[in-house]
Length: 298
Ligand code: GLU
Image (cartoon, rainbow, N blue to C red):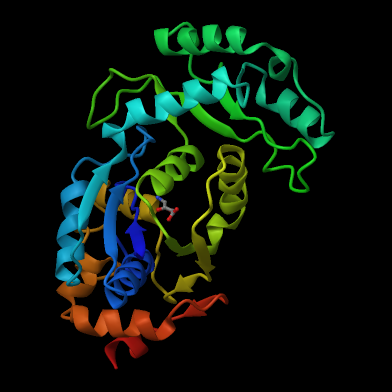
């Protein structure tokens, strides 16, 4: 069974670039009678825009996409906590309280920091203190014990979770420990039985990080294809910029026609069928491509 997913961050409206992951993943699973999952990745409380969960679903429906299962990561913290605890217990992860610069210095020399040498018992104690609020934001993270000699320093002992004091816009202030993208995505892709991952090439190093966890847990990594960037000359595809400009009143809304959001394209009168055709035509090409308004209109 082919299982794919679209995993948006609810931090801004979908634009044509994000819609590409959705359209390709949906199409691929449908082509093989598989399953398509929608998963909101909202473990960064700072960035969550609460109206975006519905907004994104409306856009997906407009595109003609349907999903078989839907998950929200902020409902699944107990699952990530269980795995973190297990990894700590087994000495496969550790709580690191080093300053980031200090950690990086050692990491770049392929050396372990003091925290890495603690016993699982001490780690579990530190973990419970993290949960209890004994550490402030930035004072402790859990790191996955990778090969310290991994050729890419950015992969060595990557962080799996951190402390965030700001309440989450959706689930409030009851959690202080939040998984980081690479951890929650790894657990979820495995737990949800994802077989194929289609996403942008900004995730290439993330794939390497995620693979270290899969190997450690004896799981097999899905087929992952990271395609090249898609740009529209003259249109900003930055979600953060878009959200800011709307909040500051510089744009009339998420469907302001100067944007390349799906809402704006819809307002311009562009049909979802046309968008789907364009995206499928660009396909999974690994090189960066650019799409002009003229092409879209044509
Ligand atoms: N939430 C991630 C993003 O939007 C998903 C990346 C992935 O598909 O793993 O970039």
